Length: 214
Image (tube, rainbow, N blue to C red):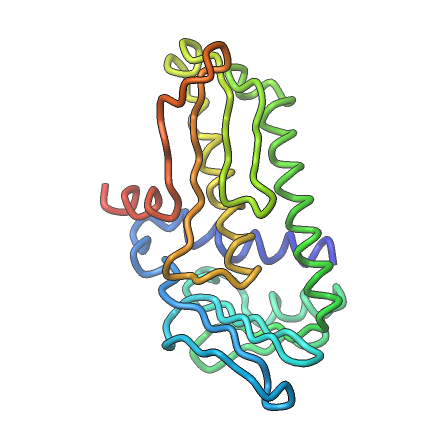
């Protein structure tokens, strides 16, 4: 499952976010969370192009829209997912892919995504590539990050690129956890490590939309 989480990350949100020409098209628009008839209760949002997370009595189905797989061999993406233990990966006529997994697998996937966020934090603070960034704090569900920096060094560097990684992987976690893809936010606060003052706030996916407009 670890590799599957990486496959989803590589072929999903990262591609959607980095496709500047299609940023407005790749932005998730809607998400639906349903229980199957066997569960005898459901709640349904309007259909859209966002990631659909259908939580049944025993299984979870995650449908990722075609815009998340630009340039990918869809059959290979599906085959790789199944090879990593996903019960079923189906390439749909519209180019989206539906992953069917047990609830236990979905829980494991979310745990692995959480691990990926923690690894990304450690890489940013310990690799030496972003020397102004001293520490990163997060909320439990990764919808809020506080990045503590040497403000002067940060403002005279390109270390701000690290926030894109946090914004994308945090957004990825939110959507696959069943967040409302039309309304969720990942907020990154830049704080002066010496004073604690928050001097900048970056909000995803709004930041990606702004990049696409530039």
